[in-house]
Image (cartoon, rainbow, N blue to C red; front, side, top):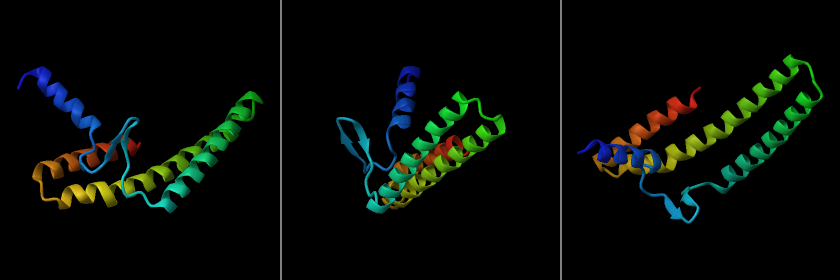
Length: 124
């Protein structure tokens, strides 16, 4: 395999979900197996986060005390981590479980790699 081919395979691995059960659309990949209640909770959290960020903008414009701004930033970080935990749980429950149970060694290995990458990327 040439370096160019290896790079193309690596790029494809970064883009494709290892479970192979996601749906493609004109907008890109779509989630499968999303619980309506989880989706609703995440959307509510994201709207709340959006309001918190607008509040942060106001605080900076009003030259509020730095420690107060930093406290609000920490609150936004935690709220985003909460949404991320919900999404990770859904991914593990549906996509990862399907890929691992399928018995296809390559798909399982790809899923393990994807999960490890996600953990390191999002555990900061």
